Image (cartoon, rainbow over all chains, first blue to last red; front, side):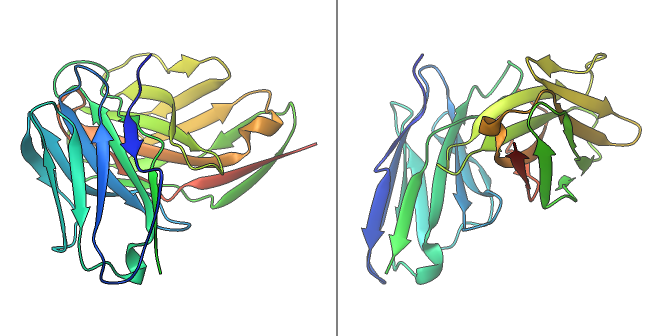
Length: 114
Length: 116
């Protein structure tokens, strides 16, 4: 069965650079969530989109932006990278309505800022 | 706002034994879903089991069962017959109004180590 696809899986950037992470949800899933998991931490919610509109916003820095496109894939753009942005970034998808409510997670994109 | 509490930072269990990972939650919403995810050292987040707030019976999935005590607001994960491959980080999580575009809130996790 198709799963959530995230790219790239690993990314190394310098401070003050920009990074873009991509997420392709499970087909027919209309909701995408982004989470950031620092070393030894639990995943922290950043932002979510339902039917291409932002549906909720968590602890996402102003330096970060995201959007969901017409094909439902999503991109997380991170600018002016800081050392503290080094983390595992998860994308998850679900159906916005109906179902048991499980979020399906991608394998994550590991960002290292040097 | 919802909150998940996992009070066990780490647990040890012997192979083939059962283990219970604790989770308590807090929410004022009457409709919510409780989830357990496993995160091995490779990093991926693996869904294990789900319990809806209106479900009358405790959820079970193979060796995993969820001990749901609504009045106590607890949703403990029971792993029976532990295997070495169960060694991982385990997160309890909650969504209010599951089936909508609501976010998942995680607890701080419990690291389980299965020993021989």
